[in-house]
Each structure stands twice: as structure tokens, then as C-alpha cells.
Length: 390
Image (tube, rainbow, N blue to C red; front, top):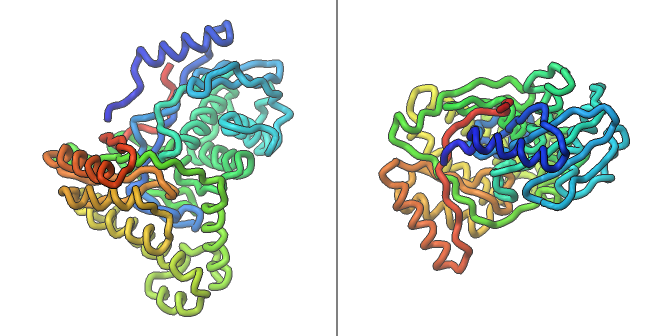
């Protein structure tokens, strides 16, 4: 997988903007999707995660207005631009894809930032939707960084991530944590982001795949997921209920050594949720230690253990993601797991470079034998976060 941002693609999105709006954009920005190496469903529990940015991104050509009009257009959705009032936005009033960029304008306004002049926006994305690669966060973050610059707001990366998260939570109605937006804004090329979701403290951890003869495959199972359908919200509510019963601010505050006693004190339905969150936080800590020691191949067993926990305790896997993990590991991957919120989406597989073709072929054959649609298999490399392109 290579960086999808080129001078030609940047010129192309600017040209489409001119056709749509009859004017030159003030600039072109991009924000990437992400895969999470380890640390799933920990962010809304104030825990730890280790995501990296993808080369795939949402690119945005934008121009500041002064009349309060907000015009939104997506290359993927087609049709005419949606036209709204920047000062008249409210949760529930905008539907479909437009609720994500509109939500960013609303969230900035709610936070006291004046973007009432409006803007013209044209978006074009190469992040697959519904694949667990944070296409919505990439869209939100592209809009947030563009408006921050267009209006001279001077917001830092974590502040922009908070704005984007609020847009998704309160405006789009998806109760996600902060990891996706932090990865999209704050990741750097060649590194994974060690994130503390409570404080938003973060540091770059070198992740040198090429130097160690490794590849990271992203296997899109093509099973679409919708995190606004209630399942994700139910998991989050269960975790919050467990923390309250244990007298903790969040499950992040439960020490490893206290886990057995805590599980014994909880209702049966909450036990697997708590066990996953606590053990997953521990896997993040171990993964960071292995990368810091210069041994990325040692991540493999942690990935597979994380998938087992997501499958058996958190129960957010599905037959297709389980099949992709088993097929990849059986063909020589060092480890594999689903990435993202679950209920479909993508699997990552850490693979020696000389086994990538074997792994790709084995997973494809397994899907064919099971009667599933062929998966899309891509190679990922840790890429840069949100940036201005032109």
C-alpha cells in the first residue's frame, strides 16, 4: 500500500472544487484512516491503545465564506452539494454522510469557536467505508484541521481530535472513543501512536516494518458494520456499569492483580467485558515494550491473543473476521486480529515479507471455500497524520 496523496490527486480535487463552486479553494488538506495494532475498545474506558495512520486518506478542498452558508460535497456520494446554515446546525437535523462535516462545524461552535462565516467543502476519500478503518474520523479530522487554519483558531492536535470526536458522538450519534480521531490527527510516518485516552498524552513508537523484513496486511472482509446501530453503545454502557459497580472512575483503573476479585464481584454478563478491557490494556503495554526494544516481530502473538479476547469475551468478531485470522496465521503470519469496532470490518496480519503472497492466497481461498465474497487485501505502512497539502 502506498501513499495515495500525489501532486496530481491534489490538483485534481482542486479542479473539481472549481467546477463545483466557481472559485479557487483556499487550500487542500488530508487526514488519514487508521488501523489499531492493539488496544481495542479501551479508549472509552480511559485506557491505552496503539494505532497507526494509513496511507489512505480523506482529502478536502475548502474555501472560507463570509455569508454563513455551509456547502458540502462528496465525490463518493455524488449529486449536488448540500447547502446548510453554519449557525443553524443541531444534532438530528442533518442525515447521511453530511452529518459528519456538519457536526464538526457544530462542535466548533459549541466549543466557542467562531466559524459562523461558513465554508465551501469538497471531499474525496480513499478510506474504505464500513471496513473498520475509521473513514468517518478521517472525514471529521480533515474538516477540523481545514477550518482550524481557515479561521485561524490555533487549536492543537488533541483539541482538534476532541472536536471531531464530539461531532461523531453528539451530532452523528456514534458513541465512539477518542482513539480514531487522535490517530488521524497526531500520527507520524514510521511510528505507531501510544495513546493514553484519559489524558490524551501520546508518544510516537518506532514501527519499522521494512527494516525487519515484515509487512502488515490489512484484510477487508467486506462485511459492513454500522456502529450507530446500538451494539457498540450497549458495550460501552456495560463497561460503564461495571466500573460504577466496582467504584472506579473507569475500567482503566482496575489493576491487573485485582482482576480475579473484581470478576467474582460482578454480574455474569459484565465479567467478559471487564476481562477483555483489563487484559487488552496489558497487551498494549507489552506491545509498546516490544517495539521499543526493536522487536516488532514479537507483536505477533499479542495480536492473536487480542483477537481471541475480542472474539470470546467482547464478542464483536464475526465468522468472516475469525476466518481471516485463522487463515492468515495458518499460512505463516506471525499474528493477526480484527481491528476497529467489530461486527465485520478488517483484520490485520503481521507477516514476514516472503510470506505475504502465501497469506493473501490462503485467506482468499478460505473465503471462497466458505462462500464469502473475496476479501480485499492491502499492505499498510505507518503514515503521517492530518496535514495541509496545498
